[in-house]
Amino acid sequence: MKKHKTDKKSRTHTIEFDFGEAVTSDSIMINLNDGTAQLALNGKALTPKSSTIKKSYHREKGPKVTFKATSQSEKPSIIPELTLSTYDAIYAIDTNTKKINDETISITGVIRGILYPRKNETAVRFSPIFCIEHRDIKSDHENIGWAEAIKLIIKEPRLHTHEKSYAIIVDSNLGLLDSYNKREIPLTKDFYLPLGFTLIYASSDTKNDGIGNLMIAQADKEASTILSALVKSNNKDFGRIFGMPFTAQRIWTLNNEPGPASVARME
Picture 1 (cartoon, one colour):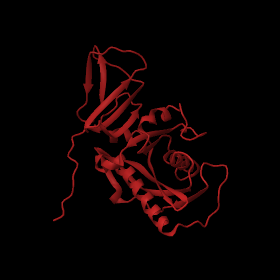
Picture 2: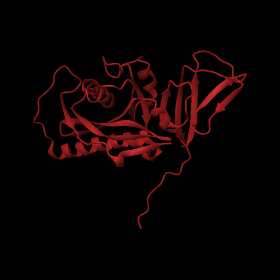
Picture 3: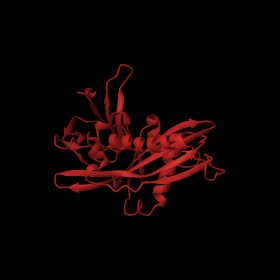
Picture 4: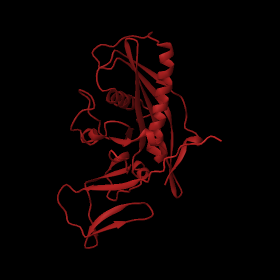
């Protein structure tokens, strides 16, 4: 019988409150049903400007973060899926890169998740929608992948219609995500994160940790599949682009529709 390696490391859940100024509290109120938490003073809840939700486990070289997100809710929850459920749409974007002969090929996989409220639960259906191929990216491969994917989401009517808030799940540049989300620094040279979009970190190495981790792992898988096929063929039969941080771009459309197998419960 084949034995499967399981991750038995216990997880630590934390919430960091940002009130924008120094505050005094004398208690914390926790809802054991949904994991929401609030600081309070004299029995009155204090309202934070924002909160950071983080999930991690212990390592000798330092904690391994498996999920990190900023919440604008007055009552943030330590449950990552409840943070994701506050967005109208969820996307996971991941880029894989490989050098073939004299050319570097990067594939960005994009997964879309749609929330479906149900009785006593919230579910998300997710599926791959497209991949972006780039040749010879001259700067950060992941950031170029995020920027180009977001541009396509905005331009595509079927992906950018009624939704007003977008969670973009990524698996890199953890230390810079807060600055990107605050629009303090651009994703690329001249492209800042658009309003309505928020970057959320989830590790693809721990896909069983939650919805976000599962989606980013799927984005990585889709990108790897196309990259492997291109490595074998090394197809160069398409035009070049000038004045961009890459020499060529091609969109791979994936027509997978979300089905029952991709429904996951947010607990």
